[in-house]
Amino acid sequence: MNMRWVLAATVASALTPALASAAVPQAPTFTKDIAPIFQEKCEACHRPDSIAPMSLMTFEEVRPWARSIRTRVDSRNMPPWNIDKTVGIQKFKNDRSLSDDEVATILKWVDAGSPKGDMKDMPAAKQWPDGQAWNFAKMFGQTEPDLIIRSTPYTQKAGANDAWWRPVVPTGLTEDRWVRAIEIRPGTVKGRKITHHAIANLRQDETDPLAQNDNDQNGNPVAGTFMEWAVGKQGEIMRPNSGKLLKVGSKISWDIHYSNGGEDITDVVELGIYFYPKGQEPKYRQVLHLMGATNAGGVDIPPNSVKSTEGFFVLRENARVESFQPHMHLRGKAMEMDAILPTGQMQVLSYVSNFDFNWMSTYLYADDVAPLLPKGTIIRVVAWHDNTANNKGNPDPNVWIGYGDRTVDEMAHAWVNVTYMKDADFQAELAARRELLAKQSTQQQQQQQ
Ligand code: HEC
Image 1 (cartoon, rainbow, N blue to C red):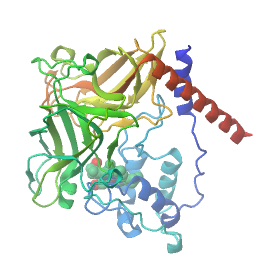
Image 2 (image 1 turned 120 degrees about the vertical axis):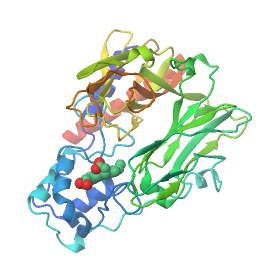
Image 3 (image 1 turned 90 degrees about the horizontal axis):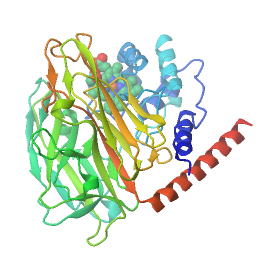
Image 4 (image 1 turned 180 degrees about the horizontal axis):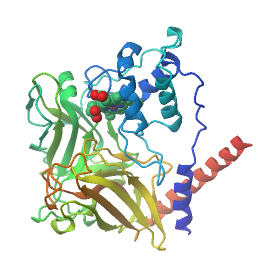
């Protein structure tokens, strides 16, 4: 069984564009060329009652921002998506970045004086799902999730600085339950304006050694992300036959980033959980691991320096890696996740070259590229911190920085969702992947002919 081939082929196929994208138009106009891009890639945040400061739905709304849009799009600061496009896996379920052609189209349009174009070319307004509905409930024949957990209320005053709110709330479960879907949302429409990001961390004692993470420096189990709310993300339905295990005595430890909404707003964040019916146990448990430098001694950043920190995680069972979420604080600069295969060969899985503390993104690998790694593979996570004055987000380059929870301390790990598989299931997954890759490459050859 040649594992190397499977992984290499996976990464290579991810780098070749699946579809030839439309060429950049000669004379782009707003109604014909720009509006469709903005509907797909900007409106999730840039519409009324969402997180961004201005709406970008109509020509009249967009026009005054043309120069600023050019700058932000050209630097790839907007839309927020910090994966390096030149290395590693490039196919994600939640990719919100612009293609090279889309960037070129937007720049060309601004440089030509941002012409409006003909109103008859304007696409119909995009219909957005109701942000205040429980969107998965209907799918399971319910009106609401089985369990709703709320953060404690927080008031963000008009004009106040960004704030991080971290209450801990018990789940109240009296027996272990398997989770098949999770949704999370701000409690009210107004709350959406101030809720920049919310992460629900799960704290529970693990008895399964495969599911355990290293303890923190005080010997307490480290809380793992259960769900995060980012604008435009509805929630998470587990793969067929997969679930997360929520245990008796578990708690949700919230990490909510509130920003200025222009008026006093009080809100909570709601986490909706859907269980598998009692007695129905999914075959695979999805486990969220903390990989990278995980303890006090691992992070040691001198003043006025750029420092890299490494951590290693050995897969004790065959696994499919489902996602990558770099976690650092204000001095975080970049993070790379590599797989060192049992053969010794090393592959870059993902590289966030431009980490931004304000956007705690989870990158979800598409089904046909999610890395399949044999047991014994070592996952290497390298974090870079910039503790110099060059880093605009750095509150003070003249102090030594160590590991800790506060935003002025640092962390250097990734949250990585993993599905473990016994040998037979893993071989079947590999075979299915090979077949899919072979089919895709035949299709590509046919298209090229
Ligand atoms: C995930 C949410 C999100 C998406 C998607 C997004 N933006 Fe933004 N955008 C924001 C937020 C929040 C801000 C304000 C904070 C900041 O300036 O970074 C912002 C700021 C901006 C600004 C700066 C406004 C100023 O004050 O100068 C521009 C320009 C912009 N966005 C353009 C775009 C464009 C164009 C797209 C799509 C191609 C886009 N954004 C997609 C959330 C988003």
